Image (cartoon, rainbow, N blue to C red):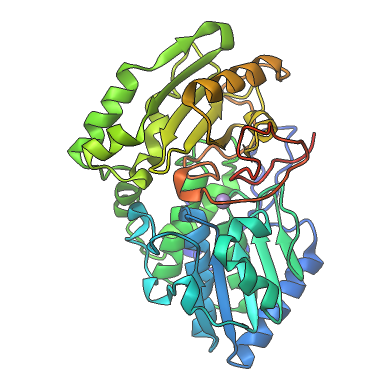
Length: 412
Ligand code: MN
């Protein structure tokens, strides 16, 4: 058996030979453009050497990958002498309750208190400028900006753009950066990165989970993190009221074979009556998406202002990222979402029509199909939603909120 404690000593993990044939096997965090990584490292080294101020920005309503990546890199930069701050746009300013266990929360600074003109702004897991919400201006004003991300749709909005769509999580790229800076990954950094890795890979169930992903996980575990406690905090911590509400959503789920769809919903009033916060509903889609009779699952959650947020999942035969993009949202091929200010009925009618018109990509329920992350905190989750104004490659229907809250997927 491999001694995983030795893996912790490796700054670059080897690519094992055992990945499925025919699929490219990138090293975890392997950059398609090594020069961008070099430029990223140079910018970070400079600000650390000068004791400069770095603002690490997670996307609006951050998920585990975004916030964990910002915290991990912030801790590493602080250890090198930089003044590191972590911020994100959320109202009120607080991490989602499932992420309050993350270490390094002393790095958090609410947007109005962020340094006006930082030496460097680093964005983590944000596919576009608009995903920064209120912190967009800080990036614009900063002396330098660095984008670190794994979304294929990333618009390269920084001075330096370390973007690798083959990375399983942005945190995997952060590990590569921390290694490049010569900082040893401690348990706090490892916990923050692990939280993003385990969520973005859907607990290592996504097709993006290569052997190298497990080696990275092993390396993080070998630092001594309590992965069981992290998993419990992320997924297995619910109030009884949520359990009952989820049961209600499951009980009334609708199976629509004509559209190969299973879906359900929760209104803001129902949620309020149960005393449940919007960010607690993040995993609700998991309560229905396993339905074997449907290729597509959709969970519709209404925010307090009436806006509907749809989490949409595919088993692989339909690119729901493209479908949601056409409706003003976006995301990944297997996991996407959209925002709508219209009624639930109108919104679902549009989703059905878009699904019916979408090309079929082959055996979606083939257990080995697909290469995209299916983690439940991917960009369409409530934790990852924000007021994007990306127009996207296609024009969204006028009656859907034109600024999709999600970064668009790659053009196909
Ligand atoms: Mn991510």
